[in-house]
Image (tube, rainbow, N blue to C red):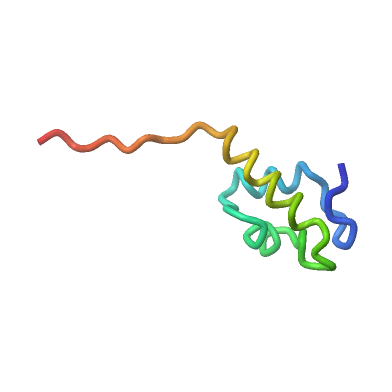
Length: 66
């Protein structure tokens, strides 16, 4: 699905940005340009990043043995 019409960025690109470390819509904008035109897609970009982050397994910190 085309998310950012100004920059022609698809949802799969935004998900890839989130998997590559983007933490919010501003990070995605720096990585692929989505949300940097009119800004109308920024809420959807943010939602896609949040969903992708929630779907990723979290690495838990393990305290070193004393």
